Image (tube, rainbow, N blue to C red; front, side):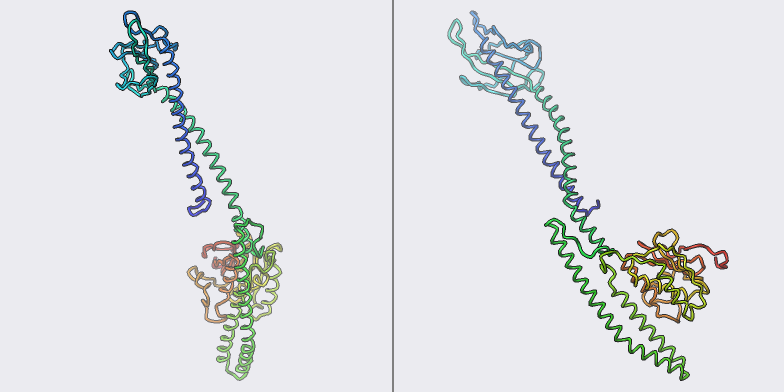
Length: 466
């Protein structure tokens, strides 16, 4: 996933929401647990306080005695964390053995009659303790006396329990977060699957295997599909209009070009070959421009439901038969080394345009040989090679531009540019390099172009330039 990925954005937002929600839930659960521990401890102290109240008494000498102390053995263990204390307003005090030599420093504002107060106070060894106290009236040998009873428990046990609970809770919440993040990822994948289907559908349309996006999409994606299909319909209409305009232009110029051809013949018969040659060159230039525009306006995708596929060998053989009848082609040996199963994912007319321009260019510059074969090391690629002078690396890219040429005669310099236009429509490229025959190798291949300085094909031992 890239930085601009919708999946990444949704995943980050979902994970952040999950972590935040679980963090808040964890803090709330820890607080509830702490309150529960405090409540449980307070309830235990209430029980001990009632036991203490039932066993306290006034001795005949006026001393406070506890005949039946609380039964928990920790009250007898020094600094055990569980303590009791009983005293009156005169300062007489008795306390549990667990307090050792410490006296609980209770607040001065004692509880009223029948009330129980709770405090957090410093206890033995500096530990914090929770104290529950109550005032009870004891009838001794003299007048009744108010006795202040207090039971305390250290809060260390609550802190230990809270830390243990928090550790267990963190592990559980971490596992829950992982499960929820995975569930969120699965939900995002499932939710964005229709967009992947739209992307694949657009790729099918671009490659020519389909014409429109399918309608089997969720209601939320349907408007996008409808808009894309409407855009494709508008594009098809524009292509049809452009093709019709190009055809009208071609038909409109056909008669003037035929008249120019007749004028050329009359000028040649009248002994003016220089003027005839200039006019013929202009006519050829106009014809090539018309051909180029017709190629550019021909629809190449969506022409059929199935992908356009053309076998290369029959097209190459037909072109060789045609070129062999031209004055230049009669002196060239054409070699076709293409397996019968070799195909190009182009329309038949486009394959003829591409190979025709390349083979015509090769025949014009070759000394004696032109070879059409499957490109080595490039599955599906086709190469047209000649044994001519070739092209310097610095000129390879320049001659692909419209009208660029390295010679001064012949064509209008549009052949290779036409080839490039056709290949661009299919996402292919034209790579120019050194041929194994010693001249130029024009290689058709899918994807990104290769370096134009690479050699192609087999080295010819008889070629003096190799």
